[in-house]
Length: 89
Image (cartoon, rainbow, N blue to C red; front, side):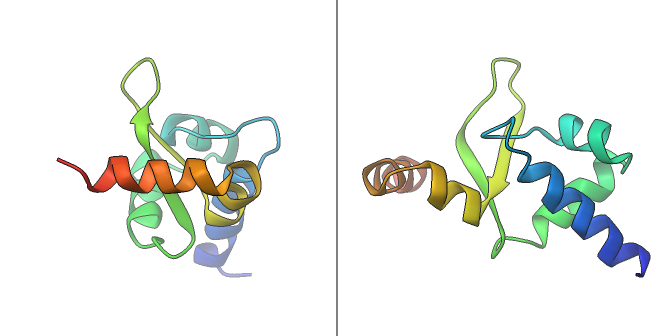
């Protein structure tokens, strides 16, 4: 497996870790050994796979999960509310 595919697999695995609903880049980095810069790059290219939370954690860090996990763990109403919050100004 090439390094890009390996990194992708590790990052997706960390995002889908059942212990967490949402992950920070630092948490993903700690679990995978991949640098935060590489993780941000992956997340920026993976809008079809990854969701960024509307809110941040208590330290102000962005939170991420996979679209698959988001659909599994959030009701339709929660998803609609999150969409509304993300598009309103």
